[in-house]
Image (cartoon, rainbow over all chains, first blue to last red; front, side, top):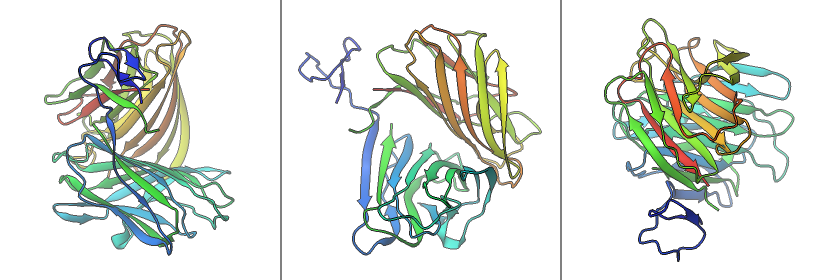
Length: 189
Length: 170
């Protein structure tokens, strides 16, 4: 890990460079979940501290060939989203459209999901900026995708109509997230 | 290894401002990231643009935009005195309390080559027509190291509670 000298502003790979203080990075792991044998219908990050500026989820999901969704929870309860939008490429066309919440599953994180081949996983990169600001509704932006004949690369946008700080995030899979699907939540200072 | 991200500076808008500038950017990082959550005061519309310039320069910018809006995907290009669509953000007619989620990535900002950037952006709105989901590739045809970045609200002000954070990447 590179270490920055507060005296000189220079970086070193050694902590033994005469620094009185070591400056920590602004990107911190909050929690990581790896789905075990038998799979999991939902993955929830709860008790999210409100001390960060932004949140990011990095995921390596595998789905059973069905859609996945996201919802958030605040002190006001669960919020399944007000509206979402997508921009995607499916290997043939670029498309755009609207996402409406699907009951208590939330807003979709992908649009086209095929039957994945063995050992194939996809990608989630989800950002929620200013998640604890009580003057704002919460906007999430996600890049998700799988590479197979019937899936798509998705740029996803979600609007959650709550001004309360987000304290919990739930990822939901129709069917189950199979074993070895992995999700990590990070806080960005 | 975990992503090495260091906050360089941040701006929380308390009173409306037309622009936000990060200046005296340290030259010790590899790349820069700007994360911002912003809204415009521009009246009678759902959205506005956040434009970008480097080093107070008004020449050498071009960009290409891929966007989703009103149920269709489309693309646009611009060559002007700034990066035109660094982000598209909600404006006065959009759903109340709604701000963008925007990120600009600027690799190799100290190099003596021309500077490229990319941006990913959500301009949310409780609407099936008036929204933007965008991806942008931009170019500043200048070999100077980037020492300052300015984001300007094109048609109004960045309203209170907009915030901007500049990070250095190692």
